[in-house]
Length: 37
Image (cartoon, rainbow, N blue to C red; front, side, top):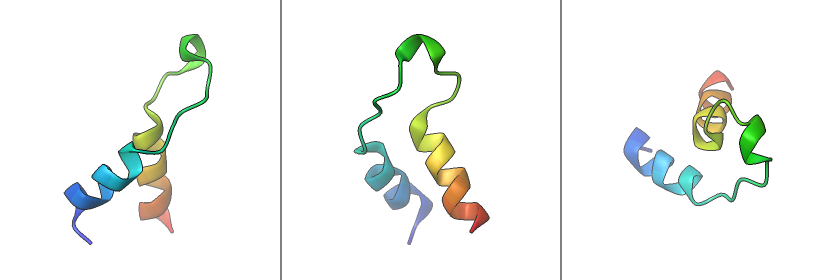
C-alpha cells in the first residue's frame, strides 16, 4: 500500500483525546506504530 493512501485511511480515524494535551497528531502516531510492526 502506498504511504499516501495509508495516510488517507488513517486520517479518517477520530481522535477523542483532549485537545490541550495533544502534542502529536493521531495519524502520525498510528503511522509510526504500523511502520514499526
